[in-house]
Image 1 (tube, rainbow, N blue to C red):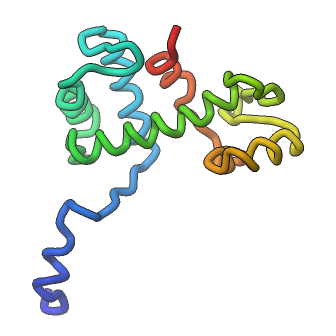
Image 2 (spheres, one colour):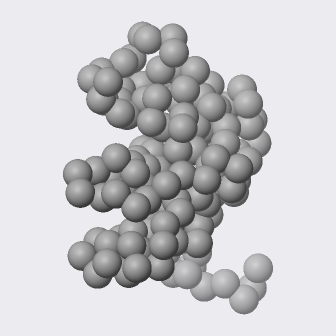
Length: 148
């Protein structure tokens, strides 16, 4: 412990340190979100009502007792990221004037011809990450966030 100065230890507080989520945690979070959505208690038009984060924290504590995931900042931040990613994929697959994109159910991947990708990415830079990256939670998140 002698190699650590007090300042480097205190700077390791919760602010500014990014948490790396593992697939098991993402899967548990999305499964709990779906369960909470299906229960209906915290449903809003396209997402959840106030108070849902604390309920999710309790649900995840039961599934992953050692993960130490807190409503704020962990769940709140990860849900924001998942919703943003879902929104990008959803817009590609069901947005106006976006024909040419398809969904490979087996690989959980957005598919399209190179020309379609190149054209879309030129005006939607954030979509480039999904050209070769699967998004396994698309169907579950669509059930929660898509407008009927």
